[in-house]
Length: 390
Image (cartoon, rainbow, N blue to C red):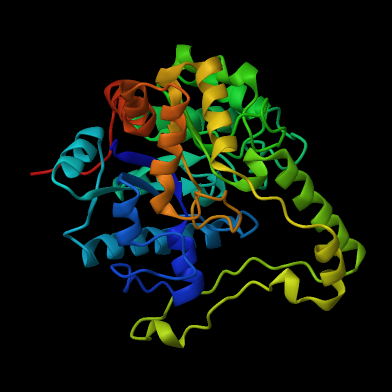
């Protein structure tokens, strides 16, 4: 079975929310999470980009502090399970760790708000092991436009273009998931080394603002970049997208309170994680005023075949050398049937094999393409900042 290098997993965020950032117990099945070590093994995951996401509406200095806490969580998680996990800084590290039977653990920062407008912060995060930065999340930064709102700076400002150049100079991958199409084009205009999409779908298959248009996919071969196709139901299924929009509209029509994103603080020094309040999201089905609408509008279920449709389309437009996988497990409650957790990758590979994908092409999708993009970015970096091994 091909080992997977997945582009995006939000387990650090979920651990912060459900266990006060404790990293214990991941060697056992963890109900309520998509991810634990046994299921990573069952899914054939050999490398994982752990997202150190923090909300994009936080003030930037607060977002930076929270990002450092999330990076600390990843390092603590790896330290607690040295037989299973190891931090990877380079493509060569990833290959070595996978060959040794451990899971290569990489770090991705999800949102340029975490840089607080500072290339010094960017360089410092790179030294801590950050291998990609997503230019925005769901809010614009002062220098880059998000997909979630109409553009304000025309994609990238002069500052944004300088940040992209600095990322490429030091070997940090530019991640274009979450950004507006105009930002995608601006970054590709600026980039010489490969860019990535860590967790996005194909917009021609499902017209969602988070997905990648064909006129961007066609530019990936010249750049050497990789689009890592995601499993988020509303990104892969038009029916799931439409249902989610209708549910949000009904919730608002009923005047129900917005669902706040859980973001608990980390434990203070010497404070047990169990003393930090656990954040929970309300269950819409438990809201009496909403139940009648839910009963009349059953939620559609996305499928493995629909995910495969996105993979097939991206391959057709960008080419087989420019596709990968980025599930977004533990970053969304809505995943397709058959891909309910990180053990599900073989189901997708099996679906693609049944559609005629060869073993060499499946190996490219699973890990080969993102490894190649990492190597190319490293080779083109004039001043890489990852730690030097003795």
